[in-house]
Image (tube, rainbow, N blue to C red; front, side, top):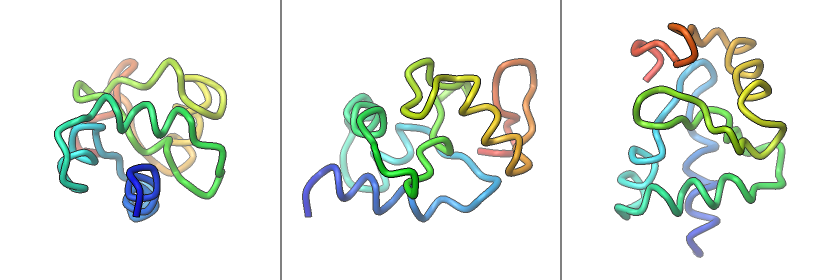
Length: 94
């Protein structure tokens, strides 16, 4: 299985209402390359991959979110019940 497929398969397992960081996803699939995980998710074209559930290590959202930027990512997370503190997901969501 290729790197893209590994990332997408893992991200599909993140439960609704929860988030993970790019680094956590990278570690889970056996790499240290969180930046590459971000690049893969930015390139995602499959709306069935919930890439909105992946955030930066500090809880902030990705300005280059694949389906419409940080505001769209925030909207999708709020719809799933993820709470925010300012412009970052709450620590409880991680």
